[in-house]
Structure formats: C-alpha cells, structure tokens
Amino acid sequence: MDSNHCISRRKLLRSTCGFVGAAALVSIGGSLSAFAEAGPMPAPEDTGLPVVGDTFIFGDGQNKGKVVVVEDLVIGGPPAVAQAKDAASGTVRESDHSTVLLLRLPPESVPPELKESAAQGVLAYSAMCTHLGCIVSDWAKDEKLFVCPCHEAKFDPMQEGKVISGPASRALPVLPLKVDDGKLVVADVFTGPVGPKKG
Ligand code: FES
Image (cartoon, rainbow, N blue to C red; front, side, top):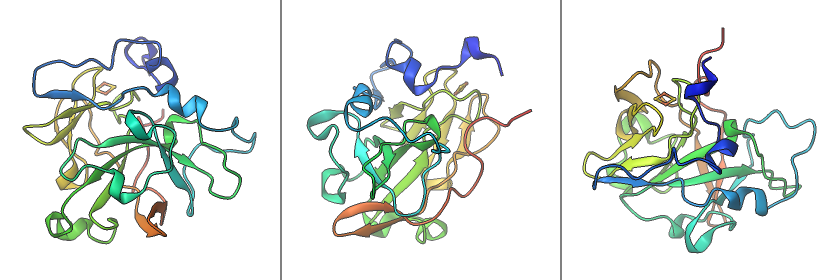
C-alpha cells in the first residue's frame, strides 16, 4: 500500500485531506477528535472490527461523543461519521476498521436488497476506503454519494456501496444494524472485507 497517498482516521485529525471541495460536496468528517475524547483507550485484545451488540458514538456536531440514536440522524443525509463502541465496557473501538458512515433514509426508500441490513431506515457502511484506506469523509449532496477525499472515489449507498467512479475497485461493505431502545446497534458482521485489499 502506498502510505503517501493514504490517510488513516488518526492522521485525518491532523490533515486537511478531508476538504470541502465543490459547493455540492460536504465534509462529513467533522471533528473526529471526539472519538479520542469520548471513551477510554481500546482494550489490547480489540481486533478493531465492530462486533455484534456494539453501539456507536457521533464524531461531530451538537451530538459529538454521544451514543447514536435514530432520531439524531438527518433523513436523507448528510451521513454521520461514527465509531463503534463496546456497549458492555464503554470502550470506543479506535480502529479505522470500526469507523462507519450512518445514513438515514425514509424507510420506504431503502432498496429491497438492503432492507435486512437497515434499521428504521438507517444504513451503515464502512468508512474505510477500499482503495488505499483513507476515511471516506465527504458527501456529494446532489448525487447522494459518499466521496473519498484522497483520490475522489465515489460510492453509492443505494447500491450496496458500489463504486461509481474513481480508483477504488471494491464496494464499501455494509454493517447490518438493529435498534435497541432507540440506539443503533450492530446486528451482524460486515458484508465484505473492510478497507483496501491486503497483499
Ligand atoms: Fe484513494 Fe480513497 S484512498 S480514493
């Protein structure tokens, strides 16, 4: 992997890579430092991936650091960048592999092939770009596509994270959700590999 062209979520905290480009492009990365502020350091055994039962915390805005509930997400986007959190221990999973994009749709707008993965109209996608691993932190609001700020790969949340343009060759995997007492909760593992292909 060419690390000169890739930023992790931690590096994004210190980078201008999560830019706001054209007028229709919205940065959704926001103040990701909230992740670092919102919980204790990860347990050494933490593999980095979300596990069933995890909740999420917001990374920015008026709810930053708060556990994500459906009502706090804006219908139709922009998506929220959030981090998985071990519900039992309160540990925030700091790995980029546990960073997700949460997009709330009107429930009737969720495509049939995504209905099982959605919870009350909310879809979760890995935020780790499948090209070189940057955090996909921009939102093309007119096209309603996720945009990676590093090399402008675009992914369609209505087509199971399919690559629409740019250098990425694989879709962003979906993280199935459920709702428990209003909170979004991980219902299953990612539907595919997270981040760039190894090797
Ligand atoms: Fe290259 Fe995302 S890391 S397009």
